[in-house]
Structures are given as C-alpha cells and as structure tokens.
Image (cartoon, rainbow, N blue to C red; front, top):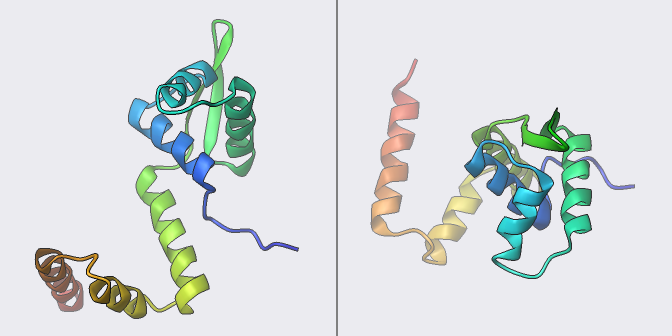
Length: 127
C-alpha cells in the first residue's frame, strides 16, 4: 500500500500552477489553457481537478452554470511540502546532500550559491 505523499503528480501540479496564476478557474478555463500547450481531453482535466479537490488542494463554488475552483492552499505551502517530502524520501531528511548534488551537477550558479550561503548565515544568526 502506498503511503500518503504531499507530492503532486505532474498533471496535478500543472493544473495547480494554472489555478494559482489565475486566482480561480473553471474546468473550461484550465482545459483551454492546457489545450494551447498540448492535446488534452476535457474529461481528463475535470477528473484531475476533482482529484485535487478530494485531496484538499482545490475548493469549488457554484457560479452560473459552472463551478469555479480556487486553491485551498498557497503555492508556497504546497511547494514546501513537496520539497520536504522529496528530501525525506531521497535524502533521509537531510537537505545538505541535495545542495551538494545541485552544486556538483552545476545546477546552481556561483550567484545562487552565494545567495544560499547568505540565507544560511541569516538563519543561523536568528535567536
């Protein structure tokens, strides 16, 4: 049995990004946004949005003849949970190996590394 994860699937995250960007959206709004990028079925979008509602990521309210969906959680909270879930699963809860891997693979520029170091010093200085 799979344990509950705070990580969204790729299609779920793609839809959440659209809803966060718009503030609120109907299934049709999301469908049309996705359709401009790639072929997707309306029923697939509707199903994924219902799943997101069931998981507590989206809420809906009736408006005219359609439901308007809006994010139940802020983007920063969801991303924080996804990152923490990833760090826990892959690096046994320690973020240091993740940062080391990013630096080794050159995914962080020297400017990024300095910014992270500055942030780490700020966090350490707080009482």
